[in-house]
Amino acid sequence: MASLVFLALALTAVFASDFEADLISGESKINGPGISWVSALTTPTKNLGTCGCHKQGVVKLTFNTSDRTKAEITFSLGKSKGYTFDIGDSHTNDGYGGDLGTQSNDAEVHSHDTALLFFGRDKAEGGHYGVLDSYYGFIRRGDVKITVEDSLVTAESGAKIIYFHSEQLFQLKGQADAEGPVNYDVYIGLNRVIDTDSLNGTGLCAVEVNWV
Ligand SMILES: *[C@@H]1O[C@H](CO)[C@@H](O)[C@H](O)[C@H]1NC(C)=O
Ligand SMILES: *[C@@H]1O[C@H](CO)[C@@H](O)[C@H](O)[C@H]1NC(C)=O
Image (tube, rainbow, N blue to C red):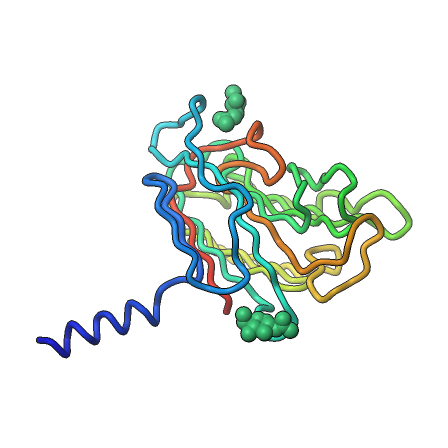
C-alpha cells in the first residue's frame, strides 16, 4: 500500500505539466522553466458566457535554442465564443496579425468563435503577410492541441490535424527584428487577446503547456 501511494506521488510529479490553469476555478501552477504570467487571471464582470469558463489572463513562454524549442499547448474548450485563445510572437498582438508596431516578428494564431486563424509576421520590405489560412469549424468542444516552434505550428482537434510550416510564422531562433528587440518569447492570451481584455471570449475552460 505504502509503495503504491509512493508510486502514485512519483507519477504525479513526473507527469505534472510545465504550466496549467483552470479558467473556471482560477487555480494555476507553473512547474517548468521559462513560463511566467504577464497578466494573472481575472474574472470579467460582463460577457460571462454560459459554461463558467471565463477567467482571462496572459502567459509568456520563453523559448531557447537548446531544450525549450517546442511547446505543446492543450486548450480544453466548452462552448467557444469570441477570442478563447490568442498565441502571438509579440506582447502587443491584438488579433488578426496586428501588434501596433512593437515587433516585426509578430505572427499570431488565434481562435474566433469556431475558427482557427493564422496570421504572418511583417515583411522585410514593409507591410505584413496578413492572413495565411483560416480553418472554420476547427474550434470545438474538447481538446485543441497546438504545438509551437520556430517557423512551425501544428494543431489538432478531434480527427483534424493541421501542419503549418512557414518562415512567416513564429521566429524563435534569435532572428533579427526590424521594429523591436530580438527575443525568444511567445505570449498566450486566455479568453482574451494578448494586448487587451477588451477583445475577449468565453469557453476556454483549462489550458496546459509542456516543453516537449
Ligand atoms: C534552455 O532551457 C533549458 C531548460 O529550461 C535550460 O536548462 C538551459 O540552460 C537553457 N539554455 C539556454 C541556452 O538558455
Ligand atoms: C469583453 O468584451 C465585451 C464585449 O464583447 C466587453 O463588453 C467587455 O468590457 C470586455 N472586457 C472584459 C474584461 O470582459
